[in-house]
Amino acid sequence: MSSLISENDLRHETDIVWLEDVSGLEYVRQSLDRLPTRTGRPAYHRDGRMVGYAVLSTAAKASRASGTFRRRVFWLLPHDRDAVPQGLYAGSAPAEAIDPLTLAPTVKGRKTERSEGGPPSTAMRELGITLPL
Image (cartoon, rainbow, N blue to C red):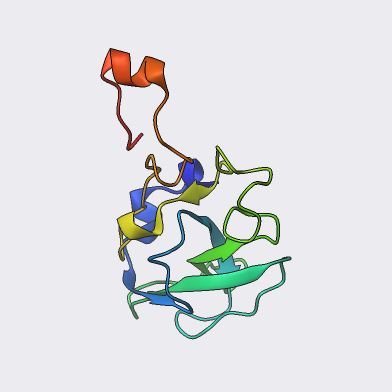
């Protein structure tokens, strides 16, 4: 989940490679995967599609135990809002979802009204509560 990713996990990122235009995506899922390389398109073994991935600098060290690198991968499932606008996530988002427009190398990204299926509720507006979370 996005909340389990710390800024320290991202300190060696140098680039985010997008495999498609994310400006029209309200959210993407992000995970920190163990991958065999610092760069290049990783293999993808989930349902749905990979929409991007992080690239690491040569300063990133592999795990002594596994020889792998921890890199972010951005993805969507077949039932996500981009494919099924009135589906399960019509007015919400999965826990690991973040607004792709808030992402950058070494920046975790965050939830926004857009990613959470906004607009804000009447109660939120009355209390003056706004996202990002």
